[in-house]
Length: 281
DNA sequence: ATTTATGTTTACAG
DNA sequence: CCTGTAAACATAAA
Image (cartoon, rainbow, N blue to C red; front, side, top):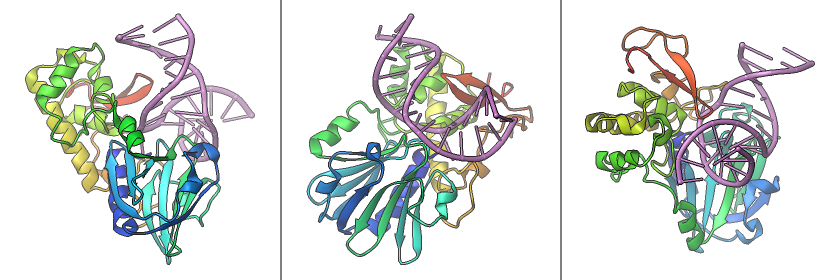
């Protein structure tokens, strides 16, 4: 289940192989996984591959874009002459013959290479949008957490206007784009801030520390190629390694790396939060 | 076997 | 408005 670093990793990998490729056809195996007219996307070249929030943007030569959101269990797997490039939620489909039973979309290129979109739970999607649709898609999104637009002043201002816990605010995509459960938990631990505290109770200094911590853990995640925490089969180059350096996420019952006390787990907004009750007052 | 949780996001009810 | 819950769906772990 990819977060920003894993999506960034996939976008970077795909960029290397997809640029200038011409799409021959798009086959939609599960209709709700594709939004727009898939048949209209053929004979166009890939101009660029980028990421915004947790969405991959494949810009096309006709001015439109293919957007990919992996949600919980999506994967993109590019296959060309035996080499396999991609990533996403780690399941057996990583090594399976494709298409597999979870394959929802198949994008075929004119050089016989293929991009498979696999998505076990079918929350994810691919959509084709024109420029106007693209603008609308991102209109309500806050600045990317790793962009320069995210400053202490910005976050302090956002915190004042709401009464939620700090963890829920930083995971709100209208405030900060791209902060998911793993990195929210780990950044709060790095900054030694209790996830339950009301956002507006944080001092200027604490917000400064939190912004720096968020950028730090997310950038570390990108360096590690993302995280692959659940049952994964280790396939060279397809899984990330952030799980080896993570601070608290999914480490309930294990000792805190800072003070040795036991990491505990609680619920916030229906999501699990992991933290150290000694370090994070 | 049955229940519970899952790295996401949105819609809807209160 | 804000806030909490369910829901989209499939699988593994408890």
